[in-house]
Length: 313
Ligand SMILES: Cc1cc2nc3c(=O)[nH]c(=O)nc-3n(C[C@H](O)[C@H](O)[C@H](O)COP(=O)(O)OP(=O)(O)OC[C@H]3O[C@@H](n4cnc5c(N)ncnc54)[C@H](O)[C@@H]3O)c2cc1C
Image (cartoon, rainbow, N blue to C red; front, top):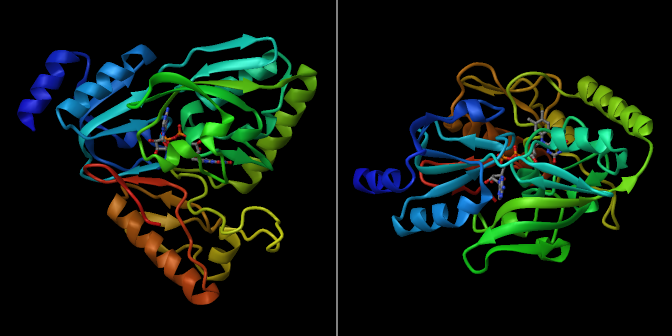
């Protein structure tokens, strides 16, 4: 590995070594990455990935870190931190690089009186992370304002794809299903012209509602997906938080990770929690819900082991 790292550094002198990952995530869990590269220019993507693949260095794409839990020993490979963040407006469209924070896209929409994304107010993370997980809030999902995106994959290089390709579903997309093979580079949102004052008012309502419901501290937002996110022909929505609450999970803890007393689907890092503790707590929560309701809860967050993503479904 040392030899490969030396070769990588020779080609990309700006790459950093032994970079602590916890500070890049909202849960603040995780050790250092062997290699860390801040991708500020999307045109570097191809060369960067080809080099990592040629040298057989595992890589992981990181956005805002609000849905990611790294291993306490860190990552034995390359973290590509998507940092390209240019945002432009063309009539009723916003074009944002994948590393732009969603909050800044919302600010741009507000300033330009563009309507459609107000309910995302307070949703952390980047444009790329939101597309991958079809992030949503208060009945609106990314798919509702998404028009197209520039993505990179090995098959086609950097190219454009429209909504059809992404096959958006609740907290899921083709990008998620292809497990790191597609990298979102730039997204075009299609909005509507409206009244900036109305956008501002809706933003304020949403943020007030979040502040009332959301526990403050180091967390990942909702930890598990809702087993039935919306009312449907199969029956009314089933929320993970309610099941976890009724299964007595509030306050449950392993080491320094604890289920919030306020919201049973939020876990809080009370100090220096580890991924191992998070997984142990997750399993305890899952087994309580399985025992009481016969329902399998699936984590919404992405765990990353020492050499790559971990799956628990
Ligand atoms: C306080 C709080 C509140 C939250 N509220 C909500 C909410 O209301 N609704 C909701 O849906 N989520 C919510 N979340 C979860 C989280 O904010 C979203 O999932 C968010 O979209 C993740 O984006 P990110 O950039 O932080 O992703 P990261 O955590 O950086 O990455 C998550 C996954 O996306 C992949 N990824 C990141 N960028 C790219 C890219 N450019 N191309 C390809 N893959 C990429 C990563 O590899 C990883 O697998 C909340 C989280 C917190 C902490």
